[in-house]
Picture (cartoon, helix red, strand yellow):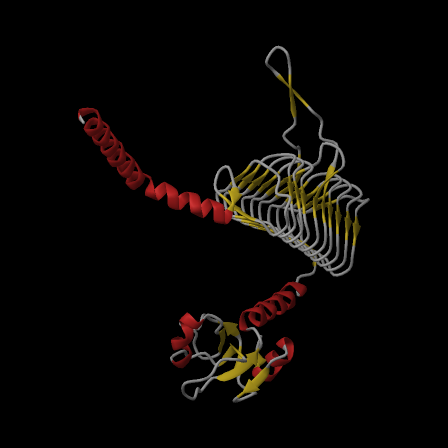
Length: 350
């Protein structure tokens, strides 16, 4: 599949400098790209490669001033990184739209409803009363249990498991191995020291334009719904417990864990390996640094916290600075104690 600079510029609302008929058929990093490939430059650290790359077309920022002429065709845009991401998305859409039909062996219940232009790969399982929208792509080993709903243009990669009654919106991408709707971790302690399982009869609702990384787990609610709101982005290896709510456009990095019934606001950012205990509220725009342990609610919007237990970022930095100075402070205190003792001894002798 080949595209000219003029065609690419049209896709990303850019302006061509140089040969508008220059063509590419693949992508390459600017430091490694060869003739016939497209590259982009967004990070100034890589600017030197702009003058050595063999790429045929390069996407650059409007603000970039060239130090010397280039052979490659340039496409200028306000934000090269965003434009490149848009282009990759369009390319991926073109590729995935070519996948249609139902491969065998696969199982599709008679009561399932399948939309137009759907792709269902071999070894998929589609249960009773499942509803699948238009242009959905389901890859090998996907299981959709009874009464699951999947919206238009959603992609479920290999090995995704969706338990009964869960709902997935439109334009959602779920990567390989993710489990949606497994039982929440609900066990009631008994007088004899044993634990009685609390049935988890809710579901999981994933709204539109959500992306979920590989091997992430999202537990079903005890009652009601575990909710992932529109635009949220979840990395690989994340645990979302029962009855959690993840706000609009919230992003969570790998290996983070959100305990039961915690509610994350909109546009929250959570770093890798962070943990949040249950039944908390995290305000809109909060930023939680990687490996932080959040044990109390964050009520003030746009607050940044770090550490375990997590607390306000700048206060944490001051504490870290004081901790580094503790050995020196200890020495100064001991010196002061010696001085006080000497002064007391002199006073006694006089």
